[in-house]
Image (cartoon, rainbow, N blue to C red; front, side, top):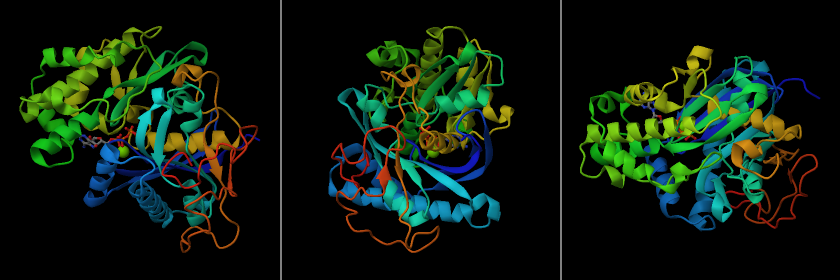
Length: 407
Ligand SMILES: Nc1ncnc2c1ncn2[C@@H]1O[C@H](COP(=O)(O)OP(=O)(O)OP(=O)(O)O)[C@@H](O)[C@H]1O
Ligand SMILES: [Mg+2]
């Protein structure tokens, strides 16, 4: 079956800015028609708790479980608010792709944990929910990230290759699409995670709006070079980063503007180095993610790179929604037994279909309906959870249903 269906994608990115909701009509292959979306910012108090958990909470801790439930409920509220006021036809959603929020990502230790309870969201919305997109890839030797490249490839399939997409999120990641659908992908460098932390540390503000301050700063190339000496940057793609792998210590001593300009220069230089090890330069580098609004960062990229850069808006796409759309697209792929990652995108041994499908309970569950705690929610009730198609049998890996991630 390959007809396009309506799918909803939900993303809580490493910048911790909020929940992106995007509606997509897609067959999980070559068709993907965006039908709009919205970002629901986290209240500052919740963002702080999330940030503290990412820094210090172990995945099995009670705080992580409580946070996972709250985060899930916030996603449900975001979906309900997004769907209210939409045309009736837009509510015929067949599946929800729920990324959750990454608490830990250490693929080399076999660990990737996304906060979020797929079963709880499925019950609350009365819709099938695919969650835990990364674990299976990591279990099979992959980096578990980035997962957006297949969606980027779908977007650019009609353009003459090679093309590339640079997602300027909390961590920047790049997808290269070559002739015959060849793909390369990997994380580039810490991006908004650094810029935002530096701004917060100096001003208490969440980010440098439009890059006003970044534009005024002067980069310190010696500091950039020192960070780039880290072995991560010498590794060829596929490769991935955790939000905590790098911090702003290398900027200490610089003022606000110079620190931002230096962090931007790091992203530009790391992008240039990654492009240099790809099979051929892309005709264009399409910019997506919130960092494309930072004019200082975009200027640093445009000056450093030999290839032209343009925002994905020039393709008629919304760069604030691409990641959420990607998880809608991937959820449909999961339902159709298609791979969600490839050896070229994550380093996994063979194409892998990640994701766990949670079906809503038939009784009492409907979008916007009252939330009710199901029996076994804290424990091992996996009856409405499955890996669709020929995958590992549900329940055999012994994971509890509602651990903060990995469910
Ligand atoms: N107007 C703006 N000017 C400058 N920077 C902005 C602006 N709007 C958003 N940003 C930056 O974008 C960030 C949010 O970007 P985005 O949502 O793409 O990242 P993310 O949630 O971390 O996603 P990812 O999962 O790709 O890392 C903000 O934290 C901020 O740094
Ligand atoms: Mg975001």
